[in-house]
Length: 287
Ligand code: IPD
Image (cartoon, rainbow, N blue to C red; front, top):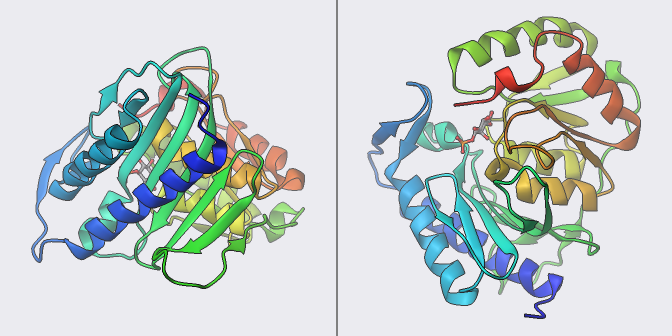
């Protein structure tokens, strides 16, 4: 329909900011855990569902022919060739405990994010409601951090990845899946990785981990078993900040394989470090 990347980016920012404000400002005083998913550690709050409903309504109103894939079950096949891939609260456990590191991730991808054939993000936004900012990128337009409030006249800040080249000086972010057998393997990998890097951060939101790589506030990020909604927006933000993301998530079923994001000089070193042990291939996928 001739929509531009800039227009899709603008919509991603607006929708992520609105859902971000919603989950922050409407947080019930006593949050309940409404369900668990793959295990007791994998929680979904009422606000996960309500945030996804809000995103769904905003997207359908603005872009009725596009598809929608969401973490909490949205799965609409579109006719335009564009699909919105949304995580209504990334970092649900932080949100539940009031740790201020949770996000709303909204991306538009070309191709089918379920398909084996590959997909690619064209625009994306990651709202960080605790800091009242939105990180965003469009294919070819750079990666930026803007104030959440559009009437705030502070200029957007351009993001760029760290130039670190040495593993021993690398601040490495990672994350852990929810299933016990996945975590057991990830812990094995940490035994090998921790002595070799400057330090490890487990921030608790894959979307914010990717944003941190993009802004250079960590040097690298690696995690296995991510899903398309965790990484679609952050992936583009890293690439547009001059970084590299490797992983087969776009070439096979989403969410099966290790994802690594870093600057050019580090990405292959980190990938090798993670795959040289147990934490490989499909059997680490989350249920
Ligand atoms: C999770 C977070 C976490 C990562 C998990 C994700 P959710 O997403 O991004 O940091 O380690 O792999 O599933 O469940 O909070 O949306």
